[in-house]
Image (cartoon, rainbow, N blue to C red):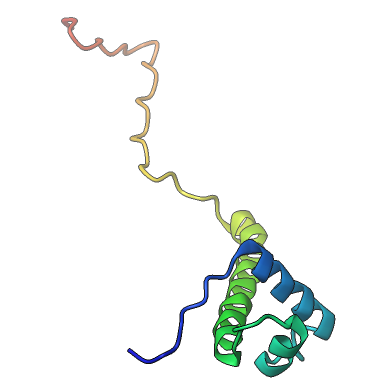
Length: 104
């Protein structure tokens, strides 16, 4: 393996990343400027590039999930994971069904 070290994104480091991205704007956020503005020793553009890709992907997924949820719920109800068998119809008053274990 090369000499590149994996960076552990602590909650504090991620918060700093978010503040910088919000400051420059998501559309204008590029790894080089993020690294400069974060001003963290040992942080490289490669670290930020990977994290920015994951961040954008997760934002997009969350947005798609949020947009899909109301329309999908309105279009069709969510099926139960294990659909129940239909419950038997109540016995007709003129033709009562015997209960299990009872003779007709």
